[in-house]
Image: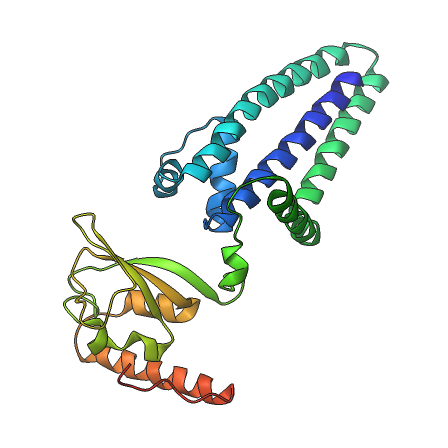
Length: 258
């Protein structure tokens, strides 16, 4: 039973540590999904190579978070494996005792899974961790998800521009994406240059990566939009829908020339 209790304590501690790291990474600007993936990868030492991994390595605060997480993870995994081995060794006794040990282990694991997947617990835990990080650390903990309402219908996303896309070859002023409720935050060029907060004269080129902010539905529709009269018609329909949305909210529509 001591080995089982040790294993459950180690797993609980591991969940707590990875949750703290997830919140800390999310507060530096990563999406919650990407932050959770990177935290678990660093803790387990899996080392997946992804686009988000490059963002973590090139960011000093995120890199510091994951370095500490990897150190803790190495000790935690070794302890968990040792406890698991001791657990199965201890099952060599009488059958009722072995069955009870397995039942306790399974019940403990199930309880941890239920707690970890509970949305209410996750929300309250995230608030507590965010407060602790701001109070007791010097990390730049800005909750961008809350600031930009990314937990609702809005998203910040990258859109890769292909030659046949409606966006390719057009100036931002001509496209008037703002009238669709979409803001262009920046453009990553194929040569590595980054144009932050580009003006209306900026031309979008094939192989550009646009950093966009807007509603999920609008961003997905824009990503599917292709050149030609169909793309122009989809743009006009999106403008009309945004205009109606603004009117329903009691606001004036965005002027077409912006």
